Length: 299
Ligand SMILES: C[S@@+](CC[C@H](N)C(=O)[O-])C[C@H]1O[C@@H](n2cnc3c(N)ncnc32)[C@H](O)[C@@H]1O
Image (cartoon, rainbow, N blue to C red; front, side, top):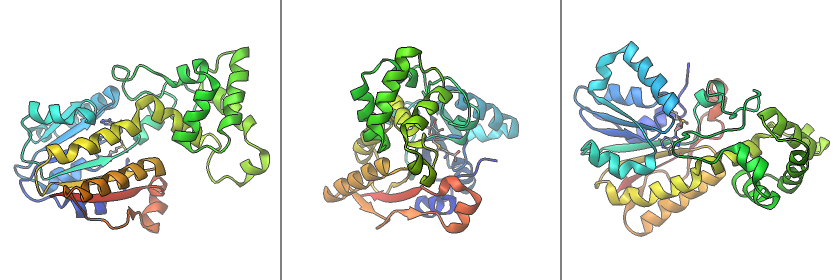
């Protein structure tokens, strides 16, 4: 079963009450949304946004099978959260008590999407959440971009130490044959990482390159930045915002944007330091290891 990360803390900071309305901007498999829906009974509604059309369809079907009545209070939309201002207007979804962003990918992407998100499976290098919204694929970056540009995204979006070497080896390999699948790419990355480093690494040597490609393909950082720019403008006073990030690049954006909004008198920051998962949670759910939660309240 899919385990939502930092669930207790999400509930603490969103503090959902009877008949309040909430937005889950990254619905995924509904791990956070469903407990919120329970707490806002009998009339509170939840607007869930999920960018991935296939995951959206699957989760919609599953929820329907489990309990069709849920859709009396759940509005599930297949779109990007960057379109929230329009979505809120279209569904006249107000007043809004709180909004949640649980960033990144779902377990579903790694295990079921077959789009190359996992380095444990040999799959085509796609990595798009939504092929309508994002035209660029990981295949295109790896096989057609100049090596300098590849090096730059590996550095900027992956903080990969061996970015230059990996980019050079990608360029060499694709002269011989295209880098078609995750395993083709992993072979190149393995070759580019010195053995003593590989031995010491706690993560798979391809982790950072995969993260960088995914972020570039889905424009994850600019989407987050855009949302944090418009949120204080579209949300009413008192609305709670909770954001869970999974790597330092996202985390830095959230921190900076929260401080910016605070200095303009638009936001009260509810978490002095980011909230992290307990040892117990990490033991049960290793993906909670890198999760950091920040919360604020619109002023
Ligand atoms: C970490 S998962 C959320 C998991 C969810 N909270 C749960 O417990 O099931 C992040 C989800 O956000 C979706 N997502 C990523 N970017 C998005 C965007 N710009 N707009 C809407 N959804 C997005 C991903 O497809 C993924 O399913």
